[in-house]
Image 1 (tube, rainbow, N blue to C red):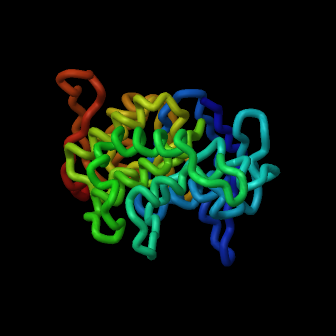
Image 2 (cartoon, rainbow, N blue to C red):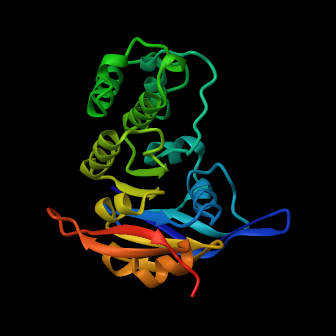
Length: 258
């Protein structure tokens, strides 16, 4: 496990400030969620963390090291990512896609080892996709593809996991299974989630982002208040406790004009 520190991160593109002076921290083993309306800056922030985008200002540290001073291989040994729209255009088999997660651990031109194969098999089994091993990736459903891509990230054996809307394309049971798996991995996790109830159930800490800025941070119960949800999401929210976990859950109505 490893801590993530994001300090005064700003992203400006074509004169527009998409992320504005964001500072946050995910401690070792925490699941930290980013929530906010579409276009609020969640994905842009995460793209900086998994090095798909260089920020205009600010730093990202893994442990005590600056992410941007590491080589790509070094950072990939510590951090794995599942972008919101992961594209695989060639029809690799599922086994080949998951094996890509082992590349940061292999020497140049090295052959796949028995340890690599065992790691990939365990990752696929862990997401309930072991039966897909020999299938072509492009033949899979959206939910099956998402499971395979999560398995690829786990096969990378990272210490930090960055997930952008990991429950996209999954049915309800699969959403719960995948987020439980993420929690049980013991990794430090930074994730953007669209579903506020899933975020409340599975995250230790939530950061609410609106207009590129963090407007609220804390435990889900403290953050997801009716006043904040009305202001940021434009909905009327009713809070109820989950009958088993006690976690805050939300029922929504339209916010009617006064």
